[in-house]
Image (cartoon, rainbow, N blue to C red; front, side):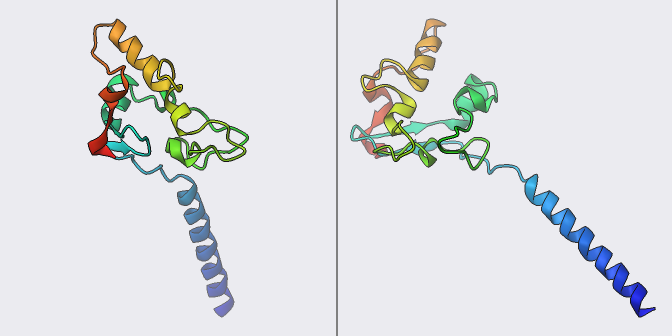
Length: 139
């Protein structure tokens, strides 16, 4: 009888461990805040309505803004914060700093500006100048 209990206890323990490892692998990434303040620019921080952009402009498609993992610095989550990899100054093996992750030095092209220009072409009023996005009070 004691041997039978040991086998049952061992099976329960093994099943529990298996279940826990599967649950850990299927965890969903943490939900980003509805609004973020992107800091670090001398012009001021950018108040970024993440939820509105994700739902209304990207149609819930994270890949619209978040690029896939790159071999030089593999992602640790399906969509992670830009600053997890893009820092100022860029740290090897990364070549793209914080600013370049959003737009070029003259802010005439890049992830944010390109989308804003496209939106404006459809009649929207998306910001396209530095101070329309960067505000000192958000620093």
